[in-house]
Amino acid sequence: MTEYLAEFWLDFSKSENMIGHLAYALLITSMMMRNINWLRALAIMAGSISAVYYWTLDDKVSMFWETLFTLVNIAQFMILQIENRRGIFNEDEDYFIKTCIPNIERSYARRLVKLGAWTEVQDETILVFEDKVPDKLKFIISGSADVFRNGKLIGKVGRGDFLGEISYLTGEKATATAVVTQPVRYLAFGQERLKNYLAKNAEVRYALEASFNRNLADKLVKSNSNSA
Image (cartoon, rainbow, N blue to C red; front, side, top):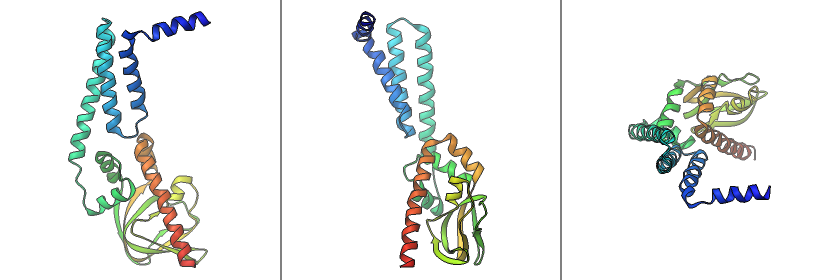
């Protein structure tokens, strides 16, 4: 065993293998990136170095595939940059993005916004029913609503607040009813459609769920202030 490990280390540490080690280290690092730009950039570097490495070994088949891998990532990186530059949002969309997913690439943010539907409702409209599972996740852009539990007023929600986020995360019934007191404009996401999208885009999911946590904390502080 000791002899095997010694031979392995001898081969592993050869100077001519250092380029290959660097390429794989960059590739592994790229897989750890949550930012898609860094992921693509490191993958391009890894693929380029690997192609050179296999060229030095006269391994034409591996060099071909590493070159193709690099070219695909370059193309995807360029498409992403073009989409980011085209990312123009109106005031409401921009507020949602800055509030909920501020560090997400604009191309991904645009796709998320397009999943939602803008809706306006008037006073006394019920946004969420107690003891029922909401079919949509709502983000309030303007207006306000009172929140009741068992008929008792327990708080208020307004601009920048989510409705139905706990049910979205847990699948459980809503614990309170929200009734509009001032005309509300909100962005609504169908739960299944949103979950399917976020399952394929982990970075967006992490950012959105982090915004749920911040908003829950804010609503708890407001509720405690109102009851004090």
